Length: 399
Image 1 (cartoon, rainbow, N blue to C red):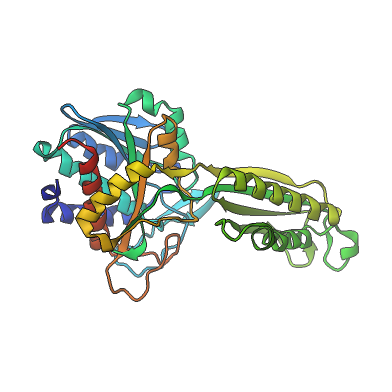
Image 2 (cartoon, rainbow, N blue to C red):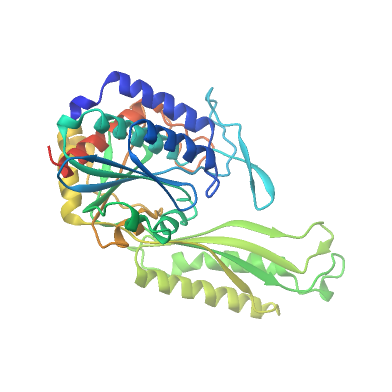
């Protein structure tokens, strides 16, 4: 199947990458992105389904053989791009009532371009393989709502059920490098919004207040001890407070402070222990400060991302053959989270998920995903992702 990957296909994929990079859309708002993908799938003669909010699924049938699903996520992030690229995003969107900049800071533009390239290569090379591929272009990965939404909308009742779900993600390593692992390769993820309700007062009369900012500050600092003092260092746990909002003026103590935190844990046992610790600390600090019982709101909940060991090794061998064993790591274990695992777990089939390189070898700096400076070298990244995808698809389809 390697012969299906030509210089012309790479050129087309790079143009796709640049287009989608210029025009990111936030989770749940991927209307233009989905329309562009749908148009390409229809042009190639696929059976096309709209599933969930802006999810697009194409079914490519080519005779008898295995059924394989391949997933690519399509949403961007509310980040102001600072890459210096001549095709940098200047688009904006409305998020929670506020106009915000948008950027493909996690590389989902690469994922779209690679998936379209793979789809085109297989659709136009029917003699090289047989079977059925279900192409899943999934929205809202960044909020963990996309996979669940597609499942709830009857994804697996509307398309052939696969024997394996495949997916990959671009990351800040050199192009030509790939990383795969077995078991839980990424962390579970939970995000909460927490409101501390106190009593407002004049800034010159703090004795009249129950200061929610002070209580929130103590809480945020204390939360860091969950990792440093309550968690076995062998467990990759992360507790991050990424938002805090309180007050409108420096000389007014407000009634409430709101902060949002993100928790990453390696498995369900550790997850429950850490989330219980979060609740205990937040409740205790609010009580210590004389505030009302705090309010907890769930923002997102990422499922496990579990690579079936047997199928992951099959994929790893295919990647070895394509890139050479020295370029393939089998130790993937990331603290980030992914919702792709829900697609496989929903129907009890194996998942195989891996990472591929974003940057041309020799780059001095390689900004990471979710940075405003994240700027994959498009040609090298797309080429690596397409080669990896073709290698693994070829191993799971009949040839």
